[in-house]
Image (cartoon, rainbow, N blue to C red; front, side):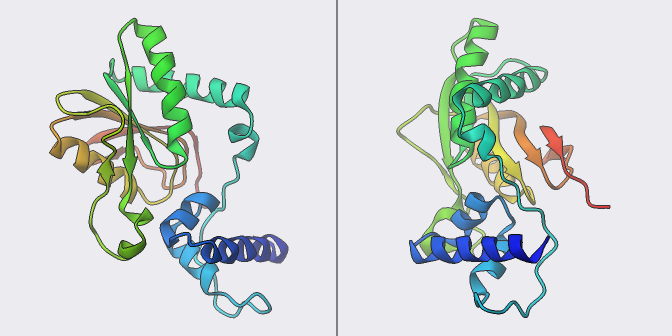
Length: 207
């Protein structure tokens, strides 16, 4: 990563921290790992002394900022998800998985003729008091339930797979059946998590 790009990420991470974002929220906002987000927030703006973790910063604003492109990508994710069978619920991981999940629920209902509801998962890393804990997140009670349902899990980027594992555990604990995890970009190159298949439009490999 060039020094200019690195400095921009440092500046953005520190700005987000000043606005009260947790390390997990900064990681999601910049599409980097928790380790990278932590490193970015600890750097002095004038001088970078500690070597950065090996990571790729992902910027998919050209998709997220355009409803037509977001719709096309969500359609592709829906098609991949349906290869694992029909689902009753599309569960979006907050924050960036929610737009994809919302459009996917509509697409999947149209493609299968069956109702598909929307569920929202709030990961542990977004909790201000729990940046460093192994606690798991929670399914929002304001949207669809997963109990007794077949569930597609959706996010924008997989970095390590930890958050997706959280959702899988939570869905199973609540009596749901995860059918697959679908993402825009998989930085970890995973084919499955906890026995649940992972499908991505783009896989990133380090050479």
